[in-house]
Image (tube, rainbow over all chains, first blue to last red; front, side, top):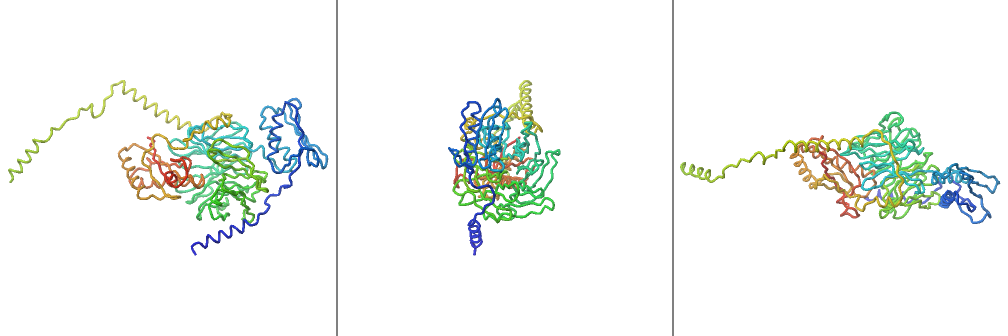
Length: 392
Length: 199
């Protein structure tokens, strides 16, 4: 009898993993693409980055000849403008993309062009312009870093005396919120404006203040303040004099409050009824609803921009793996398997890919997971342990 | 009998060492005017540096100068032991916890009683109780667990009569292990509260 509940959980677990369903609706057929050679010296760097970006993806099949392809891509330089021409073989239409001053920031320009080409071919949102923020050790103190999705342009953002952790980037890629440890005790929540390069104090207290992320409209930050006894979930409007609104208070342990892309609800992880699970909080009546049913603990939920599904980290085969599910638990998929420990899944806004990372031997690998094929695509590696990652 | 008693008392009194008066200079060193001024200046500058550093951390607005870095620079900025706590001011005494627990065991209570005794001896001293966890579980959850571990020690010290104003708490979760590695032997060392002097 003692083990009956575990047996029931196990059987339920097996039954829901037995059928995997298609939860996104991309065009699964790989597009056959022919890319013309690029012979000029000028602009070769942009060309090379674009080709290496497109080569990464399982939804493109790069062809060495023009026979039977769906699209043709050619690129060239005219003065200070880089041109890309995408021809749809089926209807004969050619689309032109122009990048002016392409040499000023080659990586950003190549990623922007990759997105335009991706969007034209797949008719879905591109993601190469995604920015990644993370914290990691830098000479003994953790600082905040920024990189593009391909890991070609790293920037160290902070130079703080206290450890800086848990950065989250806004949906419009303009703001980064993070936690800074203060001398003695206490933590401060700070906000970086990537446009003005200002780093301003939002809130400080003797509690652990940890941001989960930005609300859908990028005007407020969701965070938890925990003093060792009570967890308080706040929404802080940094566009309105840092006005703070307490959304929920409990003696349970609450972490990572995140947007569900539904203005009336947020989600967080709490051990309110035992092991940490995902809860929805209705902002108006403060009622909470447990939505996850994983027998082991759950962490790091990330919702799709339509709010219909979420990804999270759970235990499977003794390792931290990524699970995805609909809010009602019906569409349930174990996305990763094996002995790697995955961290911080981020469901990208085009809904086909999830960004995550693993750590092994003091090195971190940043990985893109293609949901339909469950393929792991390594984007780049960092010779350090990444400690909290966020992307948008 | 009474005579014998007085005789013994007189004998003891005669054998006792004469009381030695400790010269004032030995009790507390007297500084000359110049030394005193230097000491005051040092203390003042230390205080100012601490306040400046705290204000700098708390300042409302600062301008960033993002720095382009390469993977080579990242590798160089990593120290093999950089995650290990080596800060000055950390008391040798620490307490340990069971897995996923923030309950004080008998040994932990005994250590806390020693810490309380120490704080009673140095009445102006303030400490930060740092809660730490082992590497298992998630970072966020461990930050919260570490806070619970620090809070429970604070409560016990407070019950022992230490003013709560002298006790701050902070959690580093699993981010600052005492020992790097895996296995119960390592984990049990890392599930701890440490005590750091701040004044």
